[in-house]
Length: 573
Image 1 (cartoon, rainbow, N blue to C red):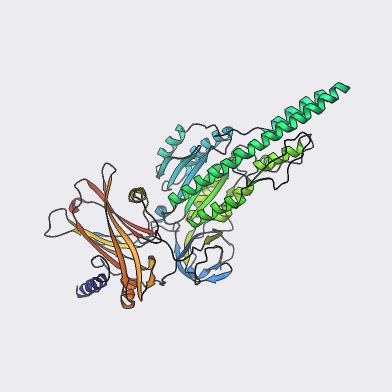
Image 2 (cartoon, helix red, strand yellow):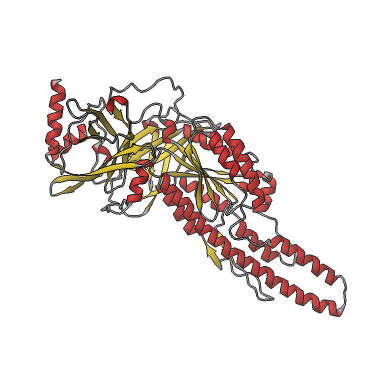
């Protein structure tokens, strides 16, 4: 008891330097203090480890990993297994009554790894969409019961079919209601147009008369101009689709970014192209230079890098593989050289429709996979779920000042026959960091988000107050100072954070109150915060209709969050 009282006094002394007066930590942590840095941002990444047979590797240790940042070795400050343990028998020890924590538990893997399926009708032929729907429904019957999945539809805009759940029956029911969509802008069938024109010209040429020869030349010139015009119209449509698709995928990535652990987007699509080549429409003109047109590689790479920065791994499944054999699909992607009258124009159209390069680029940058030439969608998505079982979170602190540039990452493991999947790099943001705006809609979304976050580790005690009005609660919260961004100002270490205490009601509403902590610690107090955490205290009486409480802590500069969810019991009301 004396030891606890001493701890309370120490934490209360800490709070004299803060802008509010929170109370003591609910309990000591039986672990060594983590490595601690200030004015530096922890670079986090998720890595998937698989063996030569493609099975997840679950027992790698911190000392077996090596991380290189632009070729420079980095010292790992974080190494945490995020996948499913080989044995689920060992559970985290039970917490005392009224004590809650978001620190990683042995059984929390399903909560930390999520998969969003994106059914893309904007870039997929309607004939292929029917097969995608059938394969997706079959896939949901085969997924493990605890898999957390959401389904989105990309058409004119990205819409949600069903939010994250492990209720596969509910997901299948919503898939059945999804109708096949016509693509937002229909592209012209260049191959069919060329065949039709060739057939007409063959008939004219077969007459072998001077008049037929004159007609042949005129018709051929007109057909070339018309088909070239169709190719250019397709190029504009395909360019618009690329921009809209990139915006939708990045928007979904930002929505998933707050969820800790590995975040996977399975994009089932006919794909987008890196380049939209335009051809000449003059009667005797040849296709324009290969540089004439819109090169989308830069935009696709930048979007992929931003998704990697958000911690999202993209898995691309070529929807045409669900209806074609691998050989047929390869012929569609890389058609043989054509010998017809319109071969140059057809080759330009084929290049504009080629999607493998963009698929490969996006998946390699984000650390996912490109799945093609398969007639079984479950094969591709099973690779995704298998990757989740072998995922690790790694983190390091760069020793240099931020340069605002893209840094290439390389991760190796000191174990034979183990392959790693990892994002290609990260953006080393410029310093100093600016406070991130968090508007009312984002606040409310964070309070209602079905997934919590342990990006800021929290431990709390929330219990009824003896002698107070019935239903009054006292919340004492310990915030892990290691997870906050600290900067030096006039000899003090400074950090700003917001604490939200939200009440969730039976009708889906949320009420919350916000408190700001502006911590300014001298070196001795900083060491205490480092070892014991930053405390917060609040006493209040929740509403009679409150079903649960969410405590959310947000770093005002980095935007990182930590959450705790507390269910209301009869004894606490």
